[in-house]
Length: 172
Length: 260
Image (cartoon, rainbow over all chains, first blue to last red):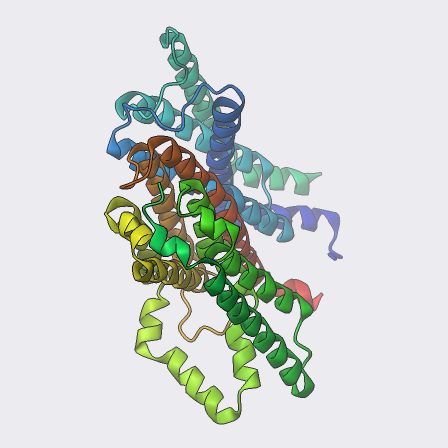
């Protein structure tokens, strides 16, 4: 329990958040990677059956890349949620910065999946027996949009903005 | 498909022997728990339960109907390996057998055991990187060389492969999740990175099996076996990752909050 005056409390929360700024960001990025990989597996592999477990055109480097990213995303989902719980326990959770991390992580992974894994390594395609171009376009534009919004949120939650907010609380 | 009659025939008689050996292992553990519980704090029931579950997973993988089917069905073989090399080790590690041994043995034997645990060979194989190579590397050799076929034909090879899968699995689990005392612990970050890489090695191998059936395995069986290895392996590793992260979460708890 904290027994400080409210202003001081707000200020200290801002300071705690800043002290854990990078952990907020990393927790978000890792959770974003895990989340997008989970959506990919659950929706495109299991529900729609568009994606295939293995595609005859898959190169060996594609298998390695797929395995590494699958393992990373699996670990990242759980690890990032424990980081999230740790941030909450320390009262250092900074939701906007965390969300920015999610968008950046998810967007980056989707862009890597869409361009490197689907196109260059030919791991598998988004869907088979259709004109693939609109699917690829939507996939990669959505990825780019997530990256842009993510970076926007991360820039918004730099230290300078934090100080302004903390000061305005003091002024009230 | 019954070109493996040699292994197959050793059925019922050896099954009973194996069953008796496993029952003995459970009895010894419970005996030690009760005996040491008189002198020290009571040994937790949960650990006894973990031990029984671990021994049962091991037993069901090497004797009985699943083990019989594993000779002709690659997916059954895979289920056996997940039980033997992944699930059983988690339960057994959670049962903290070394801790139990240390408090049950007389002081001199306990000292000898702890000296052994600190010796360089044990230190070497309990390094997460070495344990991962023994575990995942062994699987790569098994499924990408003729070893898998040899295993189905020669009972010695069969037994050795099972021993290796089990001990490498236990070593791997114990090198990641510290329940028993660890004389030379590695940092959480290091263990997490090594763990993620070996998980990747496991995933890559299961897709590789899907695409390139091991010698003597039909394509359809390799496909279902590979997929089972991929998804079931992920499910069991989920538990390991959770335990590892939870230990990290407990270890880094802020100390100040306790004082308030």
